[in-house]
Amino acid sequence: MEKMNKDIVVKKNIYIILAIVLLLGIVIEATRSQFILQVSSHEANGRSAKAAVPKQNGISPQELARLTREKFLIVTDPEDSGSGEITRNVKQVLDYMKKEYETTEVTKLTKPSVSYRTILVTVENLGKFPDLDALLRYAEDGGRVFFTRTPEYNDGFYRIYRKLGVNAMGGPVVTKGIQMTSNLLIQGQEAKISEKLIFNTSIPVELEERSKVYAIAIEDRVPLLWDVDYGKGKFMVYNGTNLQSSMNRGLIAGAVSVLNPDFLYPIMNMKIMYIDDFPSPFRQGYDLDIYRAYKKDIPDFYHDIWWPDMIRLAADYDVTYTGALIQTYNDRVEPPFTDLEGSDKTNLITYGRDLLKLGGELGIHGYNHQSLVTDQSRVDELGYRAWPSEASMTQSLQELDAYIKRIFSQYAIRVYVPPSNVMAEEGRQALKNTLPQVNIIASLYAESANNLEYIQEFSVAGDGIVEMPRITSGYADTDINDWYIANAMTSLGVFSHFVHPDDILDKARSKEKTWPILSKEIRSMMKKLYERYPWMRSMTASEGGSELTDYLQTRVYVEHSEDKITGYMNNFSEEMFFVLRTDKKMTSTQGCSVEWIDEGVYLVHATKAKFEIGLKG
Image (cartoon, rainbow, N blue to C red; front, side):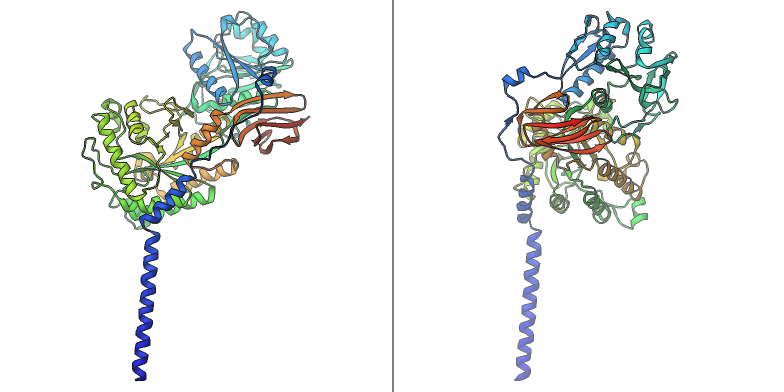
């Protein structure tokens, strides 16, 4: 009897243990279930939309009318296409800086007004000025003049070259590469771009000791950028011919800011990183390099090695990922479209969940990796297929939407990344009609050599789409990425970078570097970024889109006095960030905080529509 009771107790305990194990299994499965994923995804997605706050005005219309406004003048040559290209770039930089400017043709500039804080000359032939002496008098009286390109080697330049800090000079030559010798680019004292990548037409010059050099050519060390005091004012000369490129805009912004004492301008302060083609179905099978290093097939490598490394990267260097998911890699461009061919729900669930837990975001790259264009010539060299119609694009996007909602039913996708950064107007229309909640397109900032890619400015388009270009890419830690980063930080205060998981499998994109090497390089890049610009705000693309909209809507006015800078913002939300270059000491602040970020360079965080910074020295 006693033995029977013991058996009953043991069996009862076994049942209890089994019940606990079963319950634990149910709980574990529930945490992985679609329901939990839906709830967590909804909460994560909600953070990307800022709550609406009332707009504030820091200055009334009557006060604004009495304010001495900062004004800039751009001098152009309508007969010179190079002048037009540089002028467009200069205008864009000043627009981002929220500075007022006017343009005038060189032949019409007789007596520059002292009301202009700086004159930016995009003219090559200085002999076209009707009165060069008037330009000299403007500088002598306290004006700033920035010659944004190599002057033509003629009598006009010869007349004034000594005033520009030049002792002697030779005929024009081709110079290769750029090496910074100063922090004109913020934290970019050592920034350089290879002699294999950039060429300039320059004048070999021997400068006076009083000239300050900011950049030189790498190959022959010809001065490329310098300034010199002249009377109460200053001249700056860019002895090169590439300031028409968006990737060199930091040189323009930096030059303008060091030319002018106590110079203040707004920046966006955004740090965004995209993973294109993620989540997506990973290629099956083996890669020889991966198997040699890790003894794993391709899907297991991504799950066990690549993704944990990327998670550690995000944790160590304050990185927030925006994924751009792909449903399938088939090349179908005609219906029917299904989720059965080449898709992988497990990857979407597993990596999508992890991405959201990290505070990241899910965006879309497409139903497949075919760019949304109907013109086959635009995708021939990519090996893609053009879509037969806008209707077929629409149906593929509808299938993608249904696919995502089967996993994340509450998640609102807001970001679209065009495959290979190529998209046509009909693709944009299909996207808007099918997925109206998608209000951000993230393509490219740099000019395209083949004119195929969709090139953007940070802006809001007429149809309401927020344009959020990416600036750099890849895992490799290169001088050119450093150069682009330093230029973008100086002109915009933006880091926007993207990588692909399958870069590792592509010998051309990886430059035949294996993941052990590439993982070290991407860590090196992010480490330098984190150490040089620790003030950058890491965010998703949606959060960046919201910040960009606020930045664009805010109107900024700056007033200078002997011992103070006053900033006024109308249509102001909650905060705005500025770069301040000054050699003076800060004595007080109101409505803002100030942080040192480089020698003579400060980050101003304004939290009131009117703010003040006291200066001394």
